[in-house]
Image 1 (cartoon, rainbow, N blue to C red):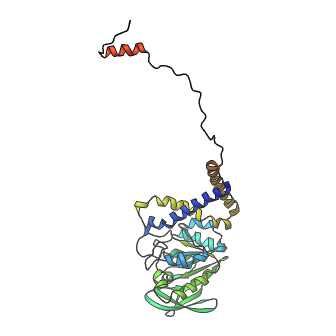
Image 2 (cartoon, helix red, strand yellow; image 1 turned 90 degrees about the vertical axis):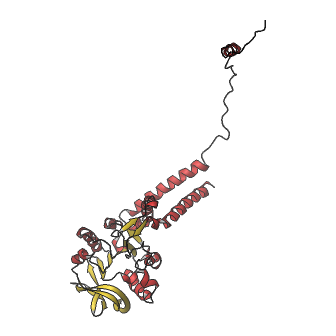
Image 3 (tube, rainbow, N blue to C red; image 1 turned 60 degrees about the vertical axis):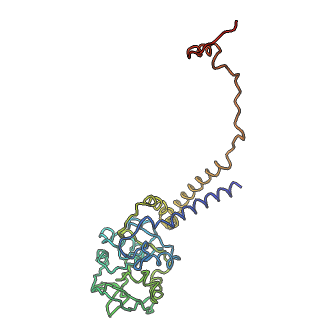
Length: 320
């Protein structure tokens, strides 16, 4: 009985946290129509994140310093047209993660990922501002892919061309260390407009899914320009807590992950178990202990009453 109540409390707490987490998007709003998971507009990638990639357990990271928490050989990192330039220091962190077996998929038609391109020996070419049907090769098969405002590449060093549009290379892949880098000169392949409002969403998604394979997905959102909604600023604190909670599954594959997850589960069981025991199990005295009734004592004597009445001007008479 006690165990079922403890489980009930744990489930209730988790449900409350899930409800709060489902409303976290109210705490921030992206500036403009950037390809962000928090943008439900035409240029956002919220549909890609929440629906299409659900089976790949997508996780959001806000800093490249978080990469060490995720086993490189089990994850694919998406960098989708960040609003701010990636520094050389951050580019090196990503490259080192790739060398250890990670896969990074850069989708960008801006110049904000130039630092990373330099590290992998690539250089941007012409910028094309219109829509065109291109061809990508994956698993030795051609796949039609629709590009909408894209960047070509004039130099890819030892990279292997992956996509072509108007006879120009629009995407390439390159093996680095134990991992792989895939660079696509267009983030619009997976934006909401392309996936929901055109007939080319299916082949575009097929192409991306083939690149990811069985890996789990990491999406970098730290390079966004956000506008905080201060009326719900307190939710951001809960967001930090939920970030920790939602990252627990990844700890299975991190260094010393088993120890971390066992420690967290142990802490959770101790807290919920103590609350349950306190509410339902600790012995209590059914009735309050009655104190011994003391013999009542007069608080004021008759003599003092007579003297008080006299002081107030009330005439008193004393029986003989």
